[in-house]
Length: 250
Ligand code: BGC
Image (cartoon, rainbow, N blue to C red):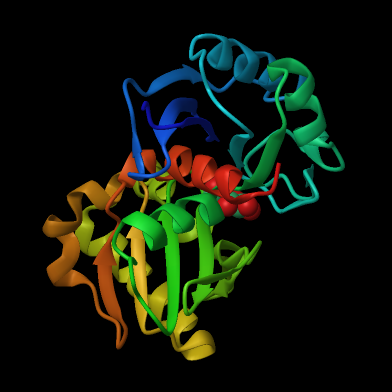
């Protein structure tokens, strides 16, 4: 019998990725497809891309999971740090349901990535306090205690050295300011120290595309907590969104 495949979609600052996810195995089955995030990323423009990506991946079962870079409650976006401000107050789940013709779970992108890591990646079986951090256009966060998610934490907006942390230490800032790894990791270390003073996690999982180069910068990292690279890197949002959708009652 074919394993049920759930459609996962991850909305990022520069691209929107989609894939059918084997939720029993915790991996994308087949191809991960992507399209550029429209500019401006208004709700109608973005939903159109989500619909087009969904149409290219027929055969999905159950609810669709959409990972979104915003605080999400009951399908509605409440913030818009790296997405068009017209998303604030928009019921993204309802809009996506109309386009995709299937029930949709909308959730924060870092929460989705964290769910993928805790179920099938670097955090698998991890008890205690685990904080997943995604370094991309912004800094996303997901907080787990004994495997249970505390959603919408927004730790990327913690003030560090008088600045919004993600405006100082995200992967986008590293590229924009042409920071080499020692310069960027010095900022990341200050951020991890500020986080550790407040939350005392046992493990930080570091994700986002830059985590694929973890071995290069790992010797520079410092934290009293254990530091692990994300297992899924660029696919975490897609996999986690599908897993969360599959875990949500129909
Ligand atoms: C947003 C978060 C999001 C993170 C990563 C931040 O700017 O406020 O909701 O998880 O970026 O995309």
